Length: 366
Image 1: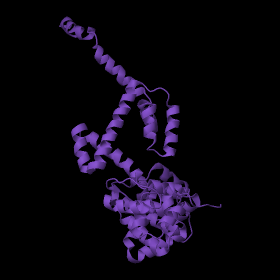
Image 2: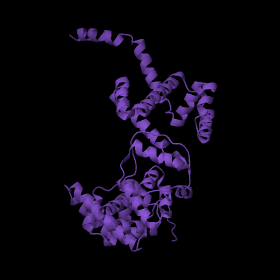
Image 3: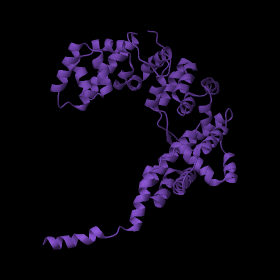
C-alpha cells in the first residue's frame, strides 16, 4: 500500500514545471518589486514615449508652470522598462477616451461606453479619476489669484455667484475673500455655500462667461460636488474671530439649525489633541465624569493619552476603572457624550477661557 502511494505521488513530484507558468510568476514577482510611479512620473513617461515633435505640440496647450514641472520630471525620470511604459500608455489612452466621452456625451453616456469597453469596475474607476481631474480645472485661474485680486473681481457679484466661485478655491483664499465682504453679503455667501451640493453645467457656464472677462477662459464639465457644510466649516476655521462671530450671529437669526450644524463641523472631539494642555485641563473641570467615560470608549489612543495626561492621578484612575466596567455602550450614547464635551469646549472658547487653534492662523504668546 505504501509503495503504491509512493508511486502515485512520484510523477507529480518529479514532473517538470510549466515554463510559461514559471515565466508568469517571475514577471509577477518583478512587477510587485518595481517602485510605483507617481502621477507626474507617469506623465513624464508619456512625454518621453511621444517623442520630441509630438511632445512639443502637446506643450503648446499647457501652462508654463506645468511645462516646467513636467520637464523637470522628464529630466529626473531615468530608465523605464518596456512593460511599465506599455502599462502607462494604456492607462493614458483610457483616460483620454474617458475624458472625451464625458465632455462630449455627459456622465451617463460615458458610463455606458466605458462599461461596454472595460467593465463596470474599471469604468467607475476611470470616471472618478476624470471627474476629479475636470473639477481641478474649473476656475483654475481663480486658484492662482490671491485673495485680494479675487475680492476685487467678486465684490460686486451676487452672493450666489461668489458662493459658487469660492467653492472651487482653497479654504484659506475663500476665507480671505469673505473677510473683505460687507457683513450682510458675507452671511448670504456662507449660507449659499453651505446649501450648495452640485453645480449644473449651465450655471457654471454663465459664471465662467462673466469671470472670463476679468481672468481667462475656463473649461466646462459635468456636475461636480461643490460647497457644502464641511467646506463652510473649513472656511470658517480660517476666518478671524470677529468675522466668524459676525457670520454666526447673523446666520443664527434666521437659520439657527444651519449655524449649529456648521459649528459642529468646525471642531470635533478628535481635535482635542491639537489643544494646549492648560486648555484641556480647563475644560475637563467642567465635564461630567460619566461623559468622559462614554467619550473615551470610542476615542483613539492619541486623544485618550491627551486627556489622561491632563487629569489628576486620582481622576485618571477613577475614569480608567469606570472604563473597565462600562460595557455594551450604544454608539449614539458615545457620540452624544463626545458632542457635549465639544459644546463645553466651544462655550469656553467663546468666553476666552481656552484656546482652539484654527487653521494655523492663531499666534500664541505663552
